[in-house]
Image (cartoon, helix red, strand yellow):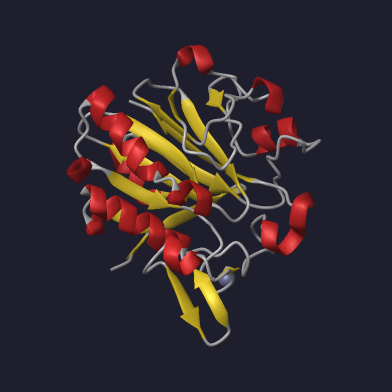
Length: 245
Ligand SMILES: [Zn+2]
């Protein structure tokens, strides 16, 4: 079962509409904004996306599984570039208001997680390596251990990512991701969103609370940055999640 994630487009960003009722701000950006650390126009792009650099926390992602709790002291990390970002981190958790968690993606899946009961949020960069390392289980583990979050209360949102229509992978994926990687006539294709969904559901997140934008960055490379379409020079979409109350 896939529950569609309703989006509202406004000024260079897509807002996750159903998340508004939880008192959080949740959105991801689109082209022409490029939030890659190397992007010359990064400062301007942050402003154009309406992102307050003084509240933003950027991790330096390595396709790993390290989860960090971010607090007010981390605000501004990574705003000026990769060096100041939270190093070797692929997921962030916070319960503090006005700490804007973020991840950068260009085909990998950005996962937004909100616990409306305990007032805790998390964001994760979930590519195949992260999913293989069960990064989402690790995030839920941190939310449970540090804040008492129950998986049954969590609401998840999937942003734009390369989808199974475009993500052709090697034979080894069939054993890495049984069910999420499938052999088709044209080859073997990986469904990152399904892999993420399977992991969340296995941890106890209810299927009806997992909302998916369904956007394929590769099919929609006109609108989103896609590594598979543009290669190493690809820009980055930023996903941002912040507790407002
Ligand atoms: Zn596609």
